[in-house]
Image 1 (cartoon, rainbow, N blue to C red):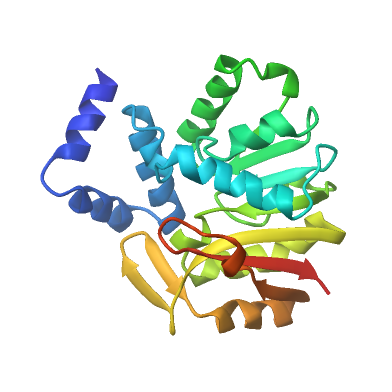
Image 2: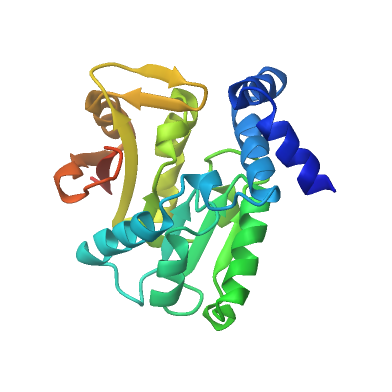
Length: 236
């Protein structure tokens, strides 16, 4: 009954109207989480985080493996969603080495169910809901990771959470850690749809200088389906 009601809401008139009303009533990340929760709950778990599971999951996985990801490495998948890429990493990494992190409780719930459905419970992935809905990474105090990935996350973030990410992610990085993320590129900052943003490379370059990171464009090595650019971030 609830799923049918949510589906009906999402299909009323323009979906943009529903999403705009969410953003008028809530803070940005809270509204984004509610939108994702609704889409997952009404049975749209794959499209809720961008679809293209058959191509995007392997693309993420192959890129990180080519860049040195080994089964013994520990990985933090920021904005893991419903495990489009996560399932590939869970299968590959040693037990307990995959951590997925998302603001959508429904996405994390779906991910946990998917892990069990695929018979991967023994891999013991750590799937975490960001209950505070920020990028301070307080849930991981004292932990460090070798690889970080934020696929299609900064594409949906305004400047403030992105700076919060740069200000805090270093706490989880050791000298050889690497953080990869995708973004929509442009010659200037632009909020071009309700939940989509584009940035010039210089924006991230500036944040890198401020918070002690080297920032490198890796887009030529990452043929994203809709042209998202790939960035590599390391501690100086």
